[in-house]
Amino acid sequence: MYSELNPPQRILMGPGPSDVAPQVLKAMATPLLGHLDPQFLTIMNDVMEMLREVFQTKNQMTIPMSGTGSAGMETVFVNLVEPGDKVIIGVKGLFGQRMVDVAKRCGAEVIAVEAEWGTIIEPAQIKEALEANPGVKVVALVHAETSTGVLQPLQEISQMTHSAGALFVVDAVTSLGGIEVGIDKNQIDACYSGTQKCLSAPPGLAPVTFSPRAGEVIANRKTPVQSWYLDLSMIQSYWGKERLYHHTAPITMNYALRETLRLVLAEGLENAFTRHQTLGSELQAGLVNMGLKLVVDAEYRLPQLTAVYIPEGVDDLSVRKQLLEKYSIEIGGGLGAFKGKVWRVGLMGYACNRRNVTVFLAALEQVLKEQGYRKP
Ligand SMILES: *Cc1c(COP(=O)(O)O)cnc(C)c1O
Image 1 (cartoon, helix red, strand yellow):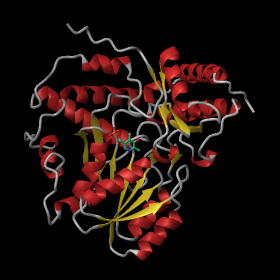
Image 2 (cartoon, helix red, strand yellow):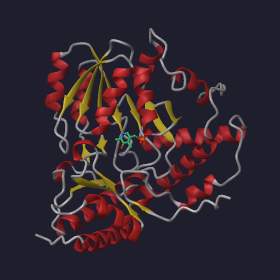
Image 3 (cartoon, protein in one colour):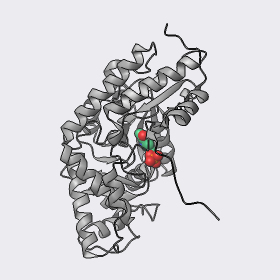
Image 4 (cartoon, protein in one colour):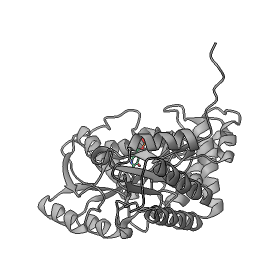
């Protein structure tokens, strides 16, 4: 016989998933509805309306795709890009690299604009790439690069993208709900996010939004979207007025999303941003105070994801193991170029609270001490 499922209560302070509020877990334990039940259609309307508020957009085409953040990424590229299209992608970490991979699989001619991990893509680099490559269709950036903790400024690159007649695409998987994404203000044409980072619901839905201009590009495609599952022209018929069956919506995940969006809006977007900013700064000050070195310069540091160098002589895995086993705290290790070199500490959504900052700093101090680490 198998025992009843009984996962331990963790403090999820890694790069995602983040802790989920009890109200969201409760919403997920409510009765299932059919995906065409009038009551569920009302819930879908609420979700779309609330997503517009959180994305800060009037975009009609704003819906949650079935799947995690990566499904959102794939949705944007498969719908906007046709074989042979030129796409500029800013690569300054793992998720920029993933965009390149996805765009190439759509047949795009990818122009990767690279920057060192831990730094931003400079607007001048994109300007140069736009000038060297006439007829670019899409310029894509990762707003909050979760592999490095870098906050990428958007305004200037958005303007030069539009001046060149291209569409501006942004990955907001880790930014949405934690820092301002501002779809309309920043004139972002297509954007995707995920439920499991600062939105603090379980992984499973990928909110996306498309400007009317991006909608036109999709409507005027010459080739069918290569992915049946992520084809927006069909999915819109389910989320739009017709409510035509395409695939069965993940009902319970939509309950979770509705409840977590309700909580974000009840707190107020600005208040949520301030909370992330304040506590992120406190966490970062605490790490510096312990003699640790942060990866990103203060100007471009994300509040919700802090990358910190692992001090010399300290074992990456055993520190993370002790944090998990003794304190039930999860943090992330480094990815790619940063593997074994950095830790990534998340303060996302519901997990972004002062208790977690204090408990984590105290636990890390204790574990480092046991590893023989002394503040320099
Ligand atoms: C987590 C993340 C993704 C991928 O999301 P999944 O939910 O893991 O599929 C994409 N982009 C960024 C910036 C992320 O942080």
